Length: 111
Image 1 (cartoon, rainbow, N blue to C red):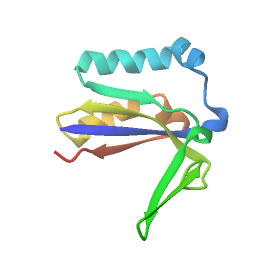
Image 2 (image 1 turned 30 degrees about the vertical axis):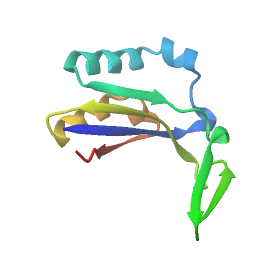
Image 3 (image 1 turned 90 degrees about the vertical axis):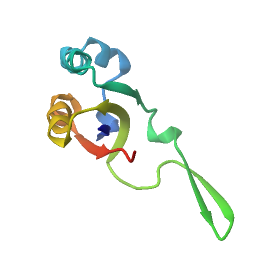
């Protein structure tokens, strides 16, 4: 079954791409995902300052800069994985370094 991990954190204290690349915890997580053959894709997202929110109300497209919600924690990236079941997905999400600093929301994909 496919799952999406929504990687959430306080982006005001998020590590840089260089810090992530040098972090052994990220290397260990990546190695575990590769060992399981679970990776179906993923990406780190740019900061919410680069976001654009689109809404359509009464056939009018409304565009605003920034995120929809005013919150401290933001989705900073996604991982798409293939796991046997929710228990395996939870076990893998628990290994993600952001599970210790922010959170990882596990969502099944409609198929």
